[in-house]
Image (cartoon, rainbow, N blue to C red; front, side, top):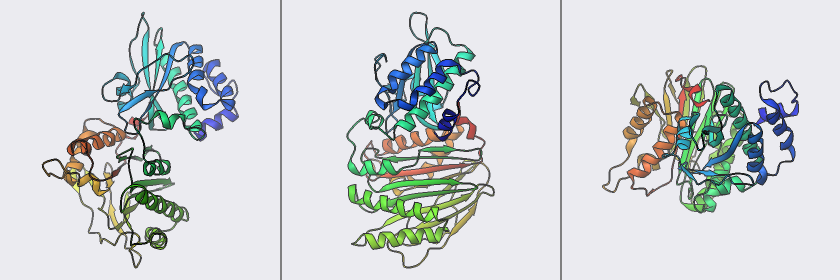
Length: 411
């Protein structure tokens, strides 16, 4: 997003080699673009690039469906299944795909990415698809993604489109606080998810990449609904405040503990795993506040790093917690999760469990699934294990350190 506006502010005829006049015209037009006009403007500029039809699809909150963004001059389309359509496959695999359309034309599906965060896909109907045409459409979709992210701050249109059902107020608070579900650099990939997407209460997560370190947190606030969401939101605010003051992990936990203890009565609390990874060395440190410890998947084996002294939940601590530490190996996957994942129970009483969690992450990776697709499918698997009825909120972060798969998330 920042890179887009930086390009836009200094754009000239030589700034976008090969982009052509339509892309430069789009860059000029966006300054006064109303969010509800985006799909129509994209369709018009698509025609200038040779696309007979251009349709934007955004993924819903559960990442089950791709919803078309309608507008003047945009051909009518139905929603697409992420798991049962060619557009869904382009989304899942982060691949550009093509197929015959109608009257001798061809259909091109391009993943819609903000960095490596999957927003949806864009469908183009073209007379012919050549490598040059595909490259130009990729550049066009890159600009579309930036426009959606920027305009999302000014409108409810995209958030409304992404909803398949009514969202609770608690879930509204939680989603507005979340960072992007996926981040990647040349050394680390972070993917996260939470369920139930439309009725999440006390579960949440956060992360930040600051130079050579990555900070991560998964938190489970006691209770359900709005009271749990308010506690979790306050805890996230305290976490970010302490983190941005560059405090060490015990002091971060102490700050969160103090805020929860002072602002919430009746001994309300939140469990959390608060971690920090040094990207250069692979040193992973964390604080256990009444929460499951991180899991490490190494070469298909489940490792439980430790020993690690547990401490009371945040809001109930009487002293600063100790720091736990382990050394990662290149290719390791670290899993931070809430108990709604491993304690998910089948109708026959079988817990999902840590081993099943680790096995799923490893098998999905070995099968070639990118990290965000692994996490998306994992949440569907957890739901299926419970016959599609969650007994508790469930959230997860999967971090991959130097696996070599980082660039698989790019087009």
